[in-house]
Length: 503
Image (cartoon, rainbow, N blue to C red; front, side, top):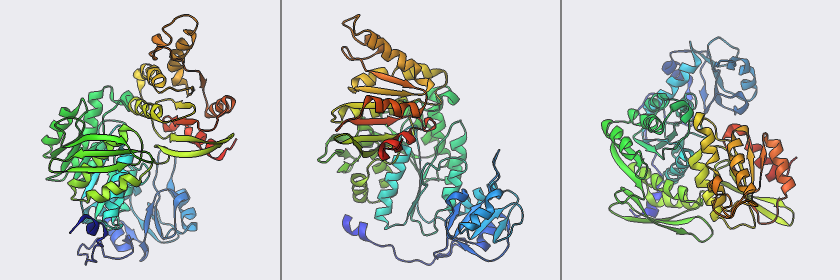
């Protein structure tokens, strides 16, 4: 059967033998819910979805009334029913269809475990300091295309102790593939998540100084990410970055867990090796890779070398689950940036349009450098960088922020807007470069900038101030505006303001 036929082949209906997973349009029924959670059902019902936020409930959903440190989901049960919830999971009787359990959070974990137990296809787990959401989405698009809609993945960034069991609980019995993202702030967190996901393939995108405030060192970050191998099913595959300084550390941990190791990157001995990447017509990159027994050529729509390298991890994971590489190539060619993670927006400015690159969801030193490098390669009338503080860097923060002066200068940035108190060391570095204009021929050298390059900037403490600074600077036709920072800085509202020209 050729590649096109495999992509178009529709899976035949099968008789589901697992008692937890009758083949039907319903996701869960009340009898199964009661059995797997150890609870009791108030009546017979079926549900078509699972939700933990009453604001997002849709008709037919099962709403879990979770309890947090400051919030009790039981307060929103009536609201969930008003929005069409078919039933709720609660720890006290309520009016309306429900499952009564001792602990709603534990019940969600039990339901996630039941969904994993009844799954009939391979499961892929993805983690890493940078790029895990994009890689997860690309793997999903590839496998969903090849399976004609029978792939499932965690949505948004549902990658923590609540998001992972929720994503598992939403997985239909018919799913032929499952792709789940796992994140962490502290050691031990991914170990707990991977034991729930029990992946057949575990992917680590890269190791970078994200969360170094909590973990203390790069080695500790690598070890925390490598916890994903602890949950690997027997005979599983570990997909790891060959170019990482921590490659051997990751490889040894994976092998100790009994995994088959597949490496990806530029390294000569990488199992999935980048041979060439050139600009593609219409943007992005035309990529050629060596997979050992074959060479594969495909297009990556998202521009930037980091997206090219991530595509190798996608190809490695798809092949590990015997997916279709042709479908993966098509998916990578069609996938642009995600909102907050590289989406490219044309925004109105005086005289025409400007390009807005939305990287507002996350930032760490590695991703900042990669994104600024790509900004420097992007044709522009002027390049404007709106950079928010990088969080969770601890005592390393001042040095990491100040070190961005070099990449800013190398990118040819014409104006920078720095947002957050943590940006003060970078503001100081850029100030030194500007003050050197009249004092020395070695302009910007002390700030780590290229000789002859000083970058005008504004340092703002709030997003509102940043919006005003941009408007005072004045955006023009064919400008390129990069917006990047940690999510808690709130730069998404700046993106929204520019996109909709809101005040």
